[in-house]
Length: 92
Image (cartoon, rainbow, N blue to C red; front, side, top):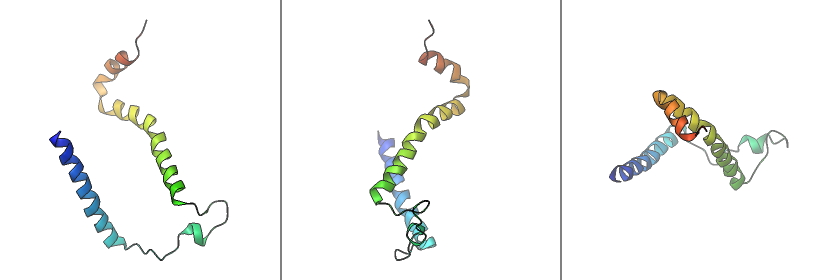
């Protein structure tokens, strides 16, 4: 459990340190308009509310999970693929 909290702490520390680093290097300008506003054509570039943008990102990540998980399992557990599948799929 200690390792979990240390990992979460390191993740948060990395998030804030790396975020500050990237912000300093790229210097995001909050007054600059995005292409969705400057090039809006109603087809490719459409201004959307923030909640909808995050919902689309969440659905893309959630949709990738069922595909990415088995592929990662197959790559990382090369010798155990057959044993894992035999435990998951019971043959009559």
